Every structure is written in structure tokens, then in C-alpha cells.
Length: 301
Image 1: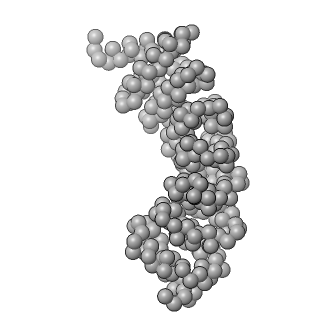
Image 2: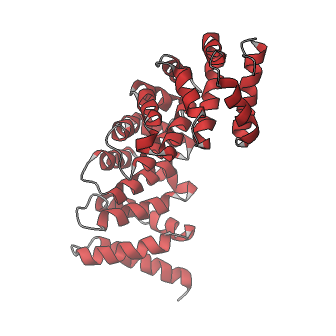
């Protein structure tokens, strides 16, 4: 028997066992499928081409039995790595199920992380981003992030970052209160950690690309002071987000440019960043200094 035939036979046996009433048989089959789909695009295609395979895995991902849910989600995530399978898997029923997994407090951290990873994988295909917006995933993510910090907060923020790259989802995020929430996370970096604060600044910079997000930021209290405080921190990811937002804020409102130039530490912070920051931060810091000089607002060093 050829290796291809053996693979097909193994997959067929596993999918048959998934229909069994025996949790042990289901568990063994899921473990085998998780293993063979981890590195093989061909195996993923073989499973996806089998009638009822994806729907069976979705059903099992709702199972309360230990390990059945995360293993099913793990296989679905592996399948989603094949670009041609992403459209096939982004059905409204699937999205609503992933939303419910994120919302339910009884979902294990592992299953929540896998649900987030699956959303990110499917949403990498730009055509799928709008589907998540229509299905309410943006509101689900904002609500979940606004709760207590958990081991899955990082994954929730990653999902939001991926989805708001679509303009319509940016609008949904702003209307759901994402701007104030993300600002709060940045301001509470001592509690959330610099990594999460940096991710939140990155999302704010994505939201600021569009009018709704930029207006929400400009309308927030002391936005310039907030961003300058970020520049005084240690996290380079946060600094990159802060200078990118400042460029957009200054382009939109000269009054904020004046406010920034009146801060005695502003020029020294930008000067330091322009020589010791990342390449992205150096570029934006140089642009900000140029804007201040051209507007004749820059204080003397």
C-alpha cells in the first residue's frame, strides 16, 4: 500500500472513530489527526475534502469532555493554515461558535487561546475580516478584554489587532469603546505589563488611521500628555505606537502640536528616540521634530 493510501486509510478510520459514542475512541482519533495535520498541508486537504469532517470537528469542539474541545480546535486551526481552506472554514456558524467560546467564562484558557488563534488565522485572508465584523466578533473581543486580565488577554488583543485592519471593523471597535479601553490598559501598564501596553498602543495606531479612531483619540482627555508619558517609558513597541499616533494627531490638529511643543521634555524625548529608537521610531521621531520646527513651536534645547 502506498504512503498516500495509508494516510487516506488512517484519516478515514479517525473520522469514523469521531462518530463513536466512546470518548476514549474520539480522544485517540483527535490526537492522531492533530499530529498528522500539524506539519502536512496535504493531510489537511485530505481531511477537509472528506464530507462532514469540518462539521464533525466543530461539533466536538463544543464537547464538555476533557481534552476533546481543545484538540478539536487545534485540528481546526491546523486546517486553517492552508490558504485555500480559509474561505471554506469561515462560515457564520463557525464564527458564532468561536465568539461564544471567548465570551463564556467556563471556557478553558487553552480553548480560548486556540479560538483566538483560529480567528487570527482565518482573518489573515482580508475577505474574511468583514465576516467577523458582521458576526459581532469585535464587540465580543472588546467586552472580553475589558474584563479582568487573564492569561488569554494577549491573544484577545492579537485578534482585535488583526480584525481592525479592515476599516469597517475599526468603526465597530471605536463605537464599542475600544479607544478608552486601550488607553486604560496603556495607563495601567504596571498591572497589565509592558507587552500588553505595547500591543494596545499598536491597536490605537491602527484605529487612528481612520477618521473615527483619530477623532476618538483627539477627543480623549490630555491625549498629548498621555502619549508623551508613553515616550518616557521603556517599551520600544509602545514608543513606536505613540510616535505614530502623534504624527496623525499633529496632522489633524495644530493646537495639539502647540501643546506638545510647550512640554519641556518633548524635544529631548524625540531627540533621544531619533538616535536610540528602532528604525520605525527613529523615522517617526524625526518627522515629529521636523513638524515642530516648521511650525516654529519647538522650544530651545
